[in-house]
Length: 181
Image: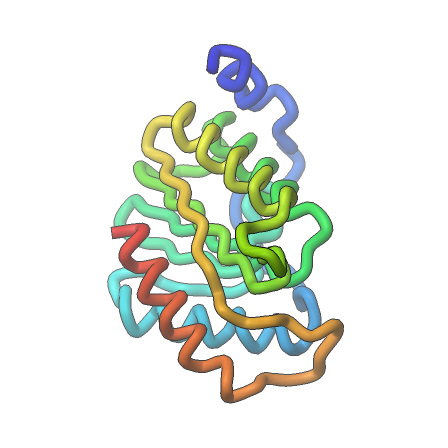
């Protein structure tokens, strides 16, 4: 792990970006609607944190963020991403550099059914993302990582919210709360 700690040392941090700043629209209207529902479900379940959408942390966009009392929860919704490890790896780099002022940081990746294999198991993209998350959390003090399933088969593009997704979003929110304590 010594090599990973060196990699996470922060020498690649983006000093030009602000620590936390809002960003524009995300992955498409369907995914944006699911993000908003997740934020609302988490706000109901964790009212001690202030929940927001599409926040930048040192230049890296984070889909849903909960902040408060020296704590940051960073949630990435992996809808149909080609490389789900990318944004969380950047986030872990910033955490290693000390760019986030929080005593505790919980990073959660929420994976849709897009990353499930037909024969069972998960895609190598998801497995790689989980490996990066677990290794980084092991290397960084005060950082946790969890991968959570969201039982939705995301449409390509998509222009709205399917009410049939609500039970899956509620179940994912419950698993997120259990993971972050």
